[in-house]
Image (tube, rainbow, N blue to C red; front, side, top):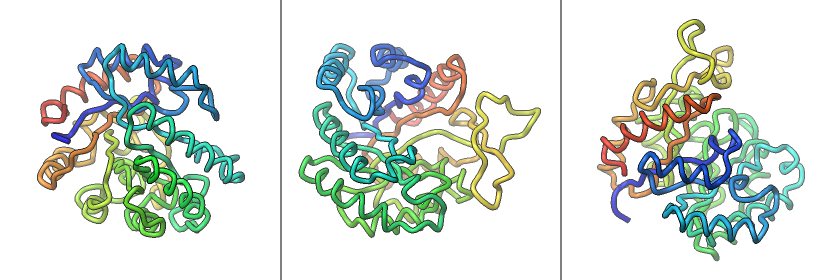
Length: 289
């Protein structure tokens, strides 16, 4: 597949109310040719309307942007955890649409299915089995993103889930700063445990939020225990606590050839664009294009 490829997530721009056309315009402005689309970037949830999918394909062709991944965030909605059949159906639809859009990866979460580092993973594994079986038929890889406060929040927890589902079409989206948020060393520790299972990467950075020093526009949620009284802050990629530079060097050395997708977490549109400018330039300097 060549070198590590750079993408930008549509989640943040979509969260500011930007339609797909504006998202693609913005991505191209920064010289990036790949996008991660969330389901709501494509069509009103929980269904994908055929006309919306066709329109997405037309816009992607017009702007010459490829789809790195389609993300389904439904696990953050407690209603889906309480109605797993609906979640399975929604995920299968996401896989089908990802295939239509030319994406080989669908990203998901386990949040309300297994909330807490020591949560029982059996309900989530049961849900994922038919989803991953369908993904295999469609030749799409499902990746599970680690979240700081659920059962995927530690690399050991993630590995336990991956081994329980047990499929080459079920891998992890390695979000290194989400491990930092979970009070785990992202690199080299978490990376060493999961390196054989990484099929996708989310890139942002973090540090402890210091009142009076850090602005509120990039203040995030509390850390996982034992630092639950402290909050994370999301600085631009080169300026946080995670050793991003060392990780990039190892990814290259180990032959990772997937996507590295930017997803700054800020609450102001002007700052989001500022982060894109800094972070795209930084990653391109590191040979991620």
